[in-house]
Image (cartoon, rainbow, N blue to C red; front, side, top):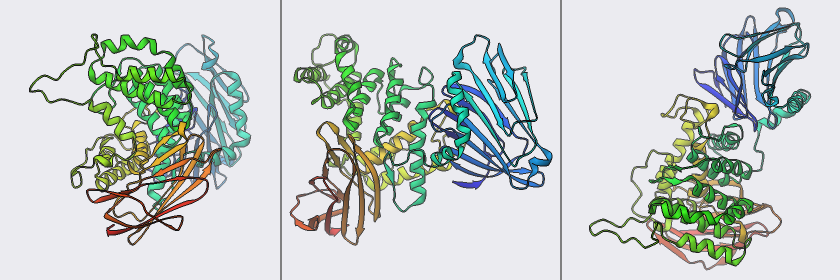
Length: 590
């Protein structure tokens, strides 16, 4: 994303480090893991005038007397370090030199530091090796200076004379890991290439022909993948944020991030508000996320561990109200689904029995009071409906209504059958976070983050946006234990082309391409990888009242159609042992 530098902020991240700053003024926070290791970093080159940013790399064109300077900020993709590089195209550094200033471990006191020819190393007096921070500069500076700052931390200045390209490397952690990060200098070009496409082909990607949409999706995917890794899962991180970050990661097949979010949830206690209308026990959300990890990617380790701890649930059940226990029931039922081939029959039956048991100390079924409307446990039921992929069978007269502006509003609208409205609202929220124009917060491109402290926040908004597309638009519902993937795509009326690459079920990845030519709708499924071909249940919701002829792989097929409102659904089950094609003609509408 290229644009003139504005007053807003940027945030770039790798898996172990993140950097935030101002587009005009530059870096003002470097975090490695959960630790703030550096504050303001400047090279005395003036203000930024243009910026080229990606989720993992930012370049700024800077004002410099008589020259143009290109600053590159790169969190090393898989190392606990950050590289900053300044390149002058007129040889200004050779004559005037470049002065680089950094504030290491800002706000911390009782530090000891050492200045050597290679760089500056700072650590707390306590000697905790995990606190080590080091900075090196290439070419070798003609002078180094370091002093304790009045407000805490160590102020470092390096002066470089000679060379058109100056690189500073900043690393933190145990001494061995710092040395490893410093060794990355020789392969900086490779790190730049990797940062340009940090997720590669490992997750669900879009290739729609709409560049703004595809780029925004890539930013959201990367934001989710990096947020948990360098964030600080703990009391200051909301459990609901971790939950939706994990759900979004699973929506695109990112198991590593989902597992990291799950680990954060395991450290949390009490209840959380997932935005569904009722609070949920954090442990129930963690159990549900573990089950989804198994159902999506076939990873059952976390689910098996939870099934073994069922003995502690009786006390939980007796103190839960109906709404809270409904989340437990959903979590345990999902756990039983996830383990139906990975645990004993008795263990699975026990899970289902506990899930079906009523809440409360007495265990008795509570009857509704006369005059009080019976309330189904809507919060947990809503979560199940949203994630089941295609809530359109319950379609009501939702079309034409307003869409809730909350982060789950577009997803709920899609599940209720307001396809055009829900998709439009989803695009607006995706674009707002991508361009930094979201109303809820100050502008910061590509963060979808309403908090002031960007480096400590998760990515729940980006997570819900990913899940909205995967489950609400594509109708994605993976069942890894059975090797089956259900797809119930419901594209907006005006859409004529859409391509999703890398939908996950177990170790398999599937591509879906949709084309519309007049009244003919064409769906092409392509297997990309996987040891065993998955079975795909394809149930598209077509924008037409009646369905005409249908063809599977070019051969005429008699498919049953179900009409709901102004849409019709057809259903076909296909073993994906090769490219498979479904074509459907709409006889009315569509």
